Structures are given as C-alpha cells and as structure tokens.
Amino acid sequence: MATNQSWKSFPALQSCEQNVGELAGRELAGVSDIPAGSRIVLYRSDSAAETADGPRPVACQHPRARHVEPVAGPGWAGYRFVVADQGQDHQTEDHDEEGTASLESALSGDRAEGFHVAVLPADLVQRLNTAPVVLVFDVDSTLIQQEVIELLAAHAGREAEVAEVTERAMRGEIDFSQSLHHRVAALAGLPRQVIAEVAQLATPTTGATNLINAAHAHGGTACAVSGGFTQVLQILRHRLGLDEFRANTLEIVDDRLTGAVVGEVVDATVKGQQLTRWRETLGTTDQPTAAVVVAIGDGANDMQMVQRADYGIAFNAKPALRPHADLELDIPSLDPVRALLGY
Image 1 (cartoon, helix red, strand yellow):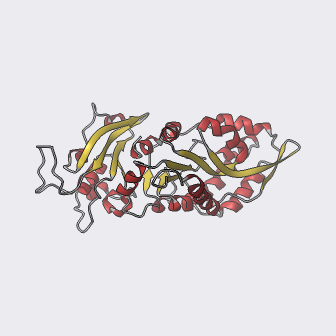
Image 2 (cartoon, rainbow, N blue to C red; image 1 turned 90 degrees about the vertical axis):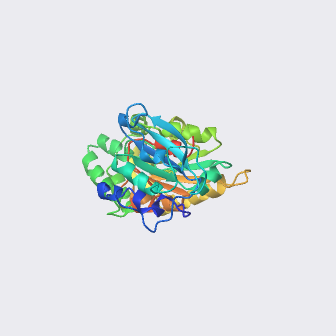
Image 3 (tube, rainbow, N blue to C red; image 1 turned 120 degrees about the vertical axis):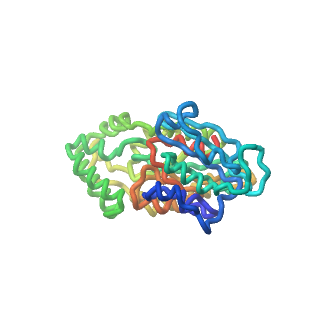
C-alpha cells in the first residue's frame, strides 16, 4: 500500500459514507495540501460528466490544476490533471493565489456534485515515468463480472446456497478456506466439461482488457491471483491477456469433480505472498526504477495483497476491504484506473 501521502491522507477525499453536503462546505484546517506532481482523476458514471453536457468540475479550474484533459470510457467520463506547486506561477488569468480555497475544498465540493475523486501520489506518478506497472487482479467480481463458483453451482442446482456462503466469505464473516471447502463440496459429481461451459459465460469487467492492453503497451505485466479455479483461468488467460496467474485446483477423477480442491488453498495470506513473489520476479527490470505494483480486489480475502501493493484499489468492494485501500472505485468499470495510471 502506498504510504507517501496516498489519497487516504486527506479526510475530505475519502469515499467512505459521509454527509457530502456538510463535507463540501468544511475547510480542511490542519491538513497538508496534496503534493505537487500528484495525478487526479475526477469522474462520474453518467453522461452528464461529458465535457459538452456537464459542468466542468471546480477543481479543474483551480490554480494548482495543470494539463487538464477530458477522459472517458463506456458508461463514465470525467477529467484528469496534474497538481502544481502551491507557489508556482500559473498561467490562468481568472484566478489569483490570494484568497483561493484549497484544492481539497474544491475537490470535496466536486464530490458533493457527484464526482468521484481518484488521486495517484506524486512518487508513483514519477516512478511510472520510467518504470512499468505490474497489475495484480482478483478475478471473480473484479476482473470478470461473475462469481465462477456460483456458475458452477448452478449446474448442481445449489447456486443460492453457494452464493450465500460466498457473500459471507467476501464480507469476512467466515473463514475463507472453510467456506471454499464447503462450496466446492456442492460441486461433487459435476462432469469436467461444465468447467469449459462456465468459462465461456465469464464476461470481462468493463475496461479490464483496455487496462491490461495499455499496461502491456507500456511494458507492464498483468497477473491474477484468485480464490477461484486454475482450470477456469487456463481457459480465460488469453482472452483476458494475463501473463501470470494462480488459483485453486479442482480435483477431478474419472472426468468428474470430486468436490475437493488439491493443494494449498489460495486465501488472503497466499494472495499477499503471491503478490510479493511477483514483485520480486516481475517488478525488477532493467529500468532505473522498480515496477509499480497495483492490486485490485473486492473482498476481505484481497486485504493482504491490497496492503502490500504500491497502490491498492477496492473495486465495488465489501466494507472489510475498503479501509485498507488507497482508492475505492465504485463504478462498474476499471477504465478510471487506466486514466489514473496515465494511459
């Protein structure tokens, strides 16, 4: 997790539930300003955010907002800019330094108007100028829109039961390993070919392939570590553009699922350890700066990998994960991540 003044350093920018009307009018006394060189993306998940149709965010007109440009993707739109120094001479004539509200106040006002705020700290922006990114994704409900185990359970007539246990595990209410064994037991007797059928039903999350393609174009790597199943990711990896992956392995005997998994369960601890391994093997490059590791997940079992990343993202996440992330992304698209990374 980024420690050098990520957006979590600024209370007015945190996206936990608050009275945004009250928040917008509150000065941020005693809070250090956002460091120069940070990148900010303001975005909304409706067409009103489009440049031609919606109001320009107040923060985009602030003296510290430089290189302001529109950014957009399917179902969302907004603006991206870089933060300038407090005392840096600015070229806009319609602002003067004296009496100008803080950038944080402008951003909190934009939040009250329905804009989401994403901040990439200056040190990571600088590193990304010379180093690639290593993307580490959770899979179910993050990289793809579905929960694969629920699709499998539907073939066994036990989807509702498995979905309820999955939800409790993702909220951190029950042990993930125990819940996995319970859910996989419901799959006993299913024929092997069901795995391929289910893999075909998996739909990449909006913006996921664009994000991965952009990372590849800039020398980066895309990895997935999942509490789901190796046999499914072996089918999906090329469609998703994954370079590396790790998941649980379903036991299959005589072409039927036994209702068990083979080997170590990929739980929160293993996810964190796997991210560290990828940092060591993929993050060291011939560039002068080590790669930037970005982790994206949605459940309690993603906590350790989100904490260990340089930048951790909670994607439409359960409450247990949110306090541990640098960014809470609450629209059904990963496109804003691409914009935030500068792609």
